[in-house]
Length: 175
Image (cartoon, rainbow, N blue to C red):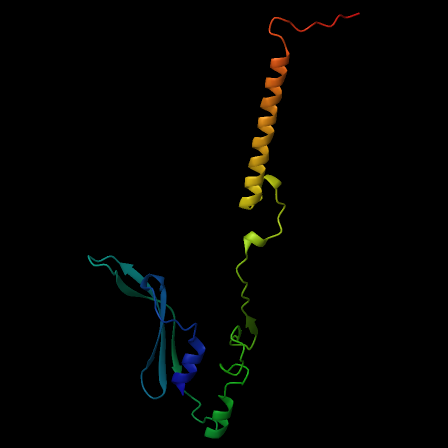
């Protein structure tokens, strides 16, 4: 019974792996006899060794307690069992939504999943010069540009042929 009481009092977050350098203090509970429990608190000091892992030494740190068990009359087994039942709200598997959980106090916590955004379909201001064109429209525009260049060249040739090389263009008088 005392074992369960101490575990409930000092229980923290359950972890699977512990980084040795992440520990800074330790609480040690020792049963001296059937009525006395010693609770000690130690700090951890790391000293380098030639190996990869450092050496850990315990340094005494307060508080130290000697607990005497005075109450030996516990509740009836059926009443104790009823008191230790976990509420249905806290049981895993009752809630079918995988994204909702409850903490130790019964508060509801949820995770929100956002789908990946598609940037190509985002409504952004698109510049006409940067828009993608299909190949046929692009080819048609190139052809029309080439045709306009040819017309311009023909016009230049026509004007130069009409104009006599010996003749100089007349200057306009300012009258």
